[in-house]
Amino acid sequence: MDASVFEIIRTNLLAKQRNLAAWLQGTPAAKRSRHLGPAGEGEVHAHLRTLDAALSQATGQTLGLCTVCRDHVDRNLLEMDYTASVCLDHLSPDERRTLEDQLELSQVVQRALLPHQLPSIPGVELAVFSRPAQIVGGDCFDFYQYRDGAYGLAIADVADHGIAAGMLMASVQTALRTLVPQGVSPADVAEQLNRFFCHNVHFTTFVTLFLGRLEPATHALTYCNAGHNAPLLWQAGRAAWLAPTGAAIGLVEDSRAAAESASLAPGDVLLLYTDGVTEARNRQAEQFGSDRLAALVREHTALSAPELVQALRQQLHVFADGQPLADDTTVVACKFDEQPPQTEEGA
Image (tube, rainbow, N blue to C red):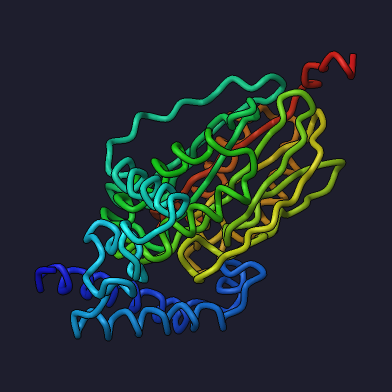
């Protein structure tokens, strides 16, 4: 393999290592805990040790040596997974098919994205707002359908903003558009996404993700929260927070994302948001915070979803005293305003 390939891989691995180390050192404990979900910081250190070993091998140009034939594995495979150590020709048929599918996905994520549109979900009113801190942002929201017809919704946030974050988020969003229609479980999709990106040399940071699945007949919500801000569920006159059930995508080696569920009823409000909302600051450097967010929803539960999003935007503007928001800001509001259609069994 050409020496320039190892230099490219080494440069990207160093960037990944620096970003993870800076996150450990410079992120407040509460935010680190949210991004990790049930995982521990020891798992991040384990990920850093894997990076150290890969960097040493890249420097010595031994990275990607096949344990069977002692030749280097395919460059595309090594860029997708810098821990790869077996050539495609030496894998079992099932292992080869799995890797070929992942290689195909790695090409798919480079394609341009189509504009997202709000779906029509019976009994659910949707509204969104998204504004990047710079010309290009690292937030995204999207809607999908699982292979069995259930509705999917997602919100994600790259641990950075600007052009690089926007390019990375485009890859994550495209990967989700490929994976969700093939799956049935948000947790399974999140784990596949982590496996795909964790060892990818071009993926040099991490992404928080909330991915939900809404049953069209019952409005039962199943979700996975991979280190993302806990969405606010306003239900029966009180706020519930859908806390992380797994670590952020790309943060730990072997992420296990648990699934949780909630039953939604008319009048309930589900508010997804990125940390540009709760971490917005006023001139006294106070954060907007989750308490203000819950108070706003409590005061405006009678509003439609678009009116609720507008009320939040107005309150953020007043809170910041007209200052531009420093981080990418995205909100997805779901207002459950009528009973979902009944199935034949429930009729």
